[in-house]
Length: 236
Length: 270
Image 1: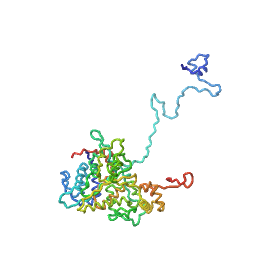
Image 2: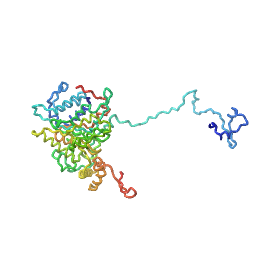
Image 3: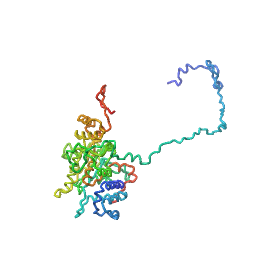
């Protein structure tokens, strides 16, 4: 069984000769080695020199009342402004040098394998069309250069050849008829997939095709904006 | 099936304004019901704009525009142009959405009319779903993308078929047998005689990299001499010519070399 009292404490315990009373407990203690007078346990009345000030009444609140300074905070921009700035498509940079003798992307050179590795400029009206179709994205470095232009890769030429193939199938009455090409483009992050789509769209516009573009697939599925106009059950 | 009026209206507005010249030349030849015909659209652009301006009418108008573009009329001499359907981020369409049905069950992306229409075009069985010819291109996105094992399997299967692999081949991709059942709606998109092709974009080749860096240098952005050795260096630093990384190296990122010390020769971002 363990002791509930510490034995060393018990050893130090001395029996007092004087009986412990309430008065002895409240007596101010002085230490013999100290010269200063013992502090009196008396609460002094507060004296205030301020004219008109009075003692607080019972339970009166006396908290300091500091006037609030009006802070000059800059106003946040109007709703939607920051979003538009974030999504703004900048297609030109006047600090970048204009490049002399840059060829433009045309129907004639779209399937030319000799053009692989060269950068071709996009034509003015074509840029307008791509802009309307929301083909440009903010992450594609358009804002670094003087005018939008694009690198011809081997895959670009492949698409150009495919478009030619479809065009030929239209006039070819003996064949199977109009061809539909179907492609899924995969690749690593930043491997130029969206730019590949943009190039395909440019070639389609140049060939007078009709382009139906879905620039962002996640928007209709996740955006709150679309939740507000919730999907309707099709009646037909 | 569910309609998305706002999506249809946005789509119609993009189609109408970006193809103004061509759509203004073509006149509607089909009948589309009183709600649309009463507006008497003179051209296909007018027709598309009806939906672009009125959201509630947009799904119906989209059906009308699509019919005009793809369904020919016997004896009509007017030829419609080919159509390119461009979809950026198809992998987002390969799972359940945040929408809920009235039973509070998640709605699958393929239950939306527009999405299922486009996916049918991209993966359909028939030879030529677009009667006037054209192209359907779906591009995947790797930024902030959802995990879609069923779609990745679909891509691998189509890739295998494209390479001429037989369905009974032991190497034909069938997915992980111990994983959860793949999304049946996505798995349905595959069929053995698929006409879809996969374009796997890899890094740029050396000549392409050189052309790109020269373009950066001519614009005054890339400040080094474009030699074979710099091209080789940037090509390696960009993970084998990944074009987005290459653009970063050409434009913003500067690399430094520790000439001496324990990290001698290590390249770091400065």
